[in-house]
Every structure is written in C-alpha cells, then in structure tokens.
Amino acid sequence: MTRRLTRILIIAGFLCVTAGIGCVERTVRIETRPPGAHVIVNDEEVGISPVRFSFLWYGDYDLILRKPGFKTLKTHYRIDPPWYQYPPFDLVSETLVPVVIRDEHTLPVFELEPAGEPVVNEVVNRALELRDRALYEGG
Image 1: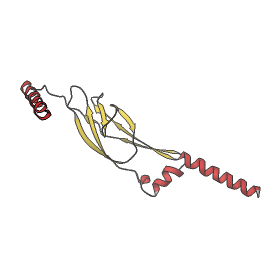
Image 2: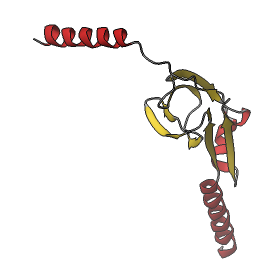
Image 3: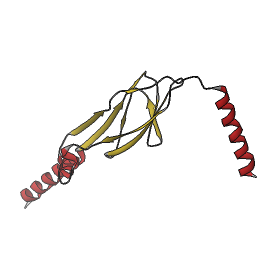
C-alpha cells in the first residue's frame, strides 16, 4: 500500500514540476537606421531602437517609428506563429516540454527618411485653420 502511494506521489510531483516549467518566450527585435527612434507598437511605447520586447500573441502589429529630424514612419507587420504554436501542438509546447522555448523574431531594418524643412506658408495656414476650427466648432 505504501509503495503504491509513494509511486503515485512521485508521478504527481513529476507532473506538477514538469507542467510548471514549460513555456514559450516570444520576443521581437526592431531596428531603425539611424538608431534612436521611439518605437510604438499598437499604441504602446516599447522603447528606443534598437529594441527587443516580449509579445503575447501572433498576428498583425501596428508600428510607429519617430525620431526628431526624420519623418514619422507608420506601418504594420505580421508575426506568424511557428508550427509548434498551432493546436494541439501548442498545448504540449506551452505546458509539457520541460524547457523554455525561445521564439525570436527580428524584423527588417526600417529606414527613416530625413524630414524636409516645412514651408512657412503651409505652417501658418494650418495654424489658422486650427484656430478657426477651435473658435467656431468649440463655441
């Protein structure tokens, strides 16, 4: 009776330890040329390029890259899952594999274009339009 109970406890302990270890660590690396751009992913700033950050799900991501003196780059990128993240394989890779699986994605380098000098008349006209809109729509 005690041998059987000991075996059951050993197996249960092994399953608990093994189930708690397995996981998939997902990361993305974004680089810009020149470096030092603010990187915003899905309306959340993740850092300054080059930057590496974790993500939770696969799919489409909206990217905004901003650096003073350069045009703001707005784009999107799709991150596709590897084969072991499709059902039913994901159950095994997320819970039963006793190691951390690293899924690292490096996006292509994003080239930032220098911003041209704004034309003074365009800036003044935009300011006047905003003022008129604020005065007449707000009151």
